[in-house]
Image (cartoon, rainbow over all chains, first blue to last red; front, top):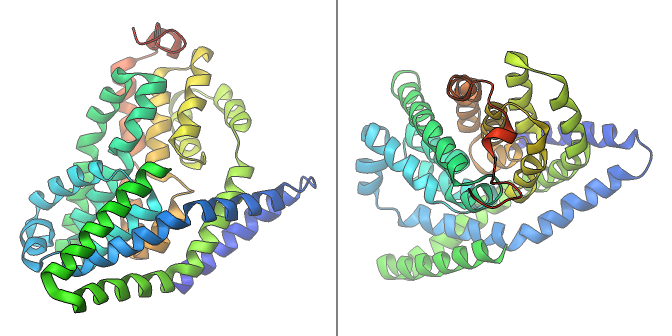
Amino acid sequence: MLLPTLVFAAVGIGVFIFNARKEDGRHWRASEDGMRFLLKMLPIVLIAFLLAGFVEVLIPEAFVRDWLSEEAGMRGIFIGTIGGMFMVIGPYAAFPIIASIYVAGGGLGTVVSLIGGWSMMGFHRIPFESGFLGFRFSLIRLSVTFPFVILSGTIAHMIDVFIL
Amino acid sequence: MRGPLYVLSILTVIFAFLSVYAGGASLFLEGISTALWTLLETTPLILVAFFVVGQMEEAINAEKMNAMLDKHDGFRAVVIVALLGGAFPGPPYTYYPFLARLSDKRMPVYLYFTFLAGKQTYDVTRLPMEVSLIFPHIALIRNLITLPMPIFMAFIYRVVFGRKDTVEFFKGFIGGGDA
């Protein structure tokens, strides 16, 4: 975790300096906003970690092996995509759960399609999307996106099988 | 915000009971200790991630995006719009109103879909969370695989909608109820 922490610290400092050029205190305001956002999200973050911990110890090995592992192949990719769509939670909650599925033995294809299903087709965004842009817009977007999520899971599965 | 919190809390309680049912107190404690270790390990990165999110939201705002979208067209527009989508900070209740607000600018409608494909694929404010909460190598592979996808999607949208603009597409919906 040290390397990503350092990389993002560098990015954060870079954008902080960029914001500081305006000399109107927006860089401090942005720091406060970030920390306020963290405080606001903290209950969800903590509960999500707790849930992820239980998921990790509870998922039966046989289920992971048969339905989500590298051996599950396309079945795992489809389950991952559909499962991701139903994960109506934010990134701070979704990622620990997805990571726990990987730790429990989930295949790379399943994990990538889970992230794709959640991030590109998640049902939690549909009320906003259809509310602002209409159901027709949502339906078209979901129809075009679905094959791409399956494709990304399939490519990840092939990387898992042939390269990793 | 409360909705997801309640749903997660209920799920956590259910899973806690399930762990006691399946493996007794030891499995329950194992679940808690797994959660605490992961949390402890990722805390520094979570702090940095939220700092970056705050700075990004200040650096990129709706006015800057609007000005850039007005300037470009064609393949370059597709790439720029997809990247702008990825750089646009905030949850759905920030970027959907932004798109709705731009709908009277007569932008090609395929760029709207491209913006969202970029947002949902490249989301830079989500990236720190992805790297910190998921394993970095998975985040890297996932991002490399999906990197060209918004461009391919844009091509499909362009074939389907051609030069149809947002005013034509959303006629009777935005500001006038669902037609």
